[in-house]
Amino acid sequence: MFQRSAETNTRDESLQCAYDTCIMIWMRTTLNIDDELLAEARKFTGEKEKTALVHLGLRALIEREAGKRLARLGATMPKLRIAPRRR
Image (cartoon, rainbow, N blue to C red; front, side, top):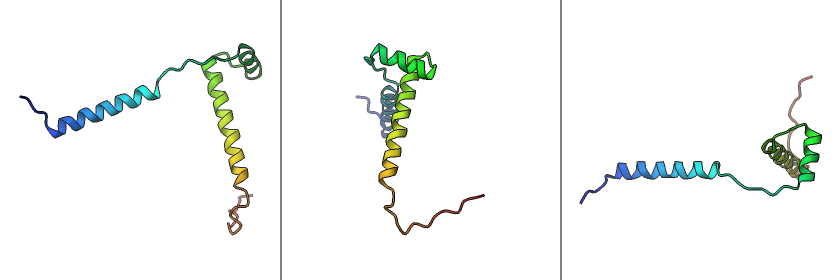
């Protein structure tokens, strides 16, 4: 019976892992989005493409939540030295 070398098995496992990762990254998803909400977003942004609108919305959500997180961290390091600024 034919046996594979350890190197071949490792390479095949690496290729399978890379394939699985690509599938996970580029997997399509079906979204049910309210048409009125989509129309309002198009009106505000001027963006026509639905995918671009979803990306803009996700980025805005991430920025907002990151800002909230940063605000919650405020004054948690009282001994922190202020960084010098250029004038």
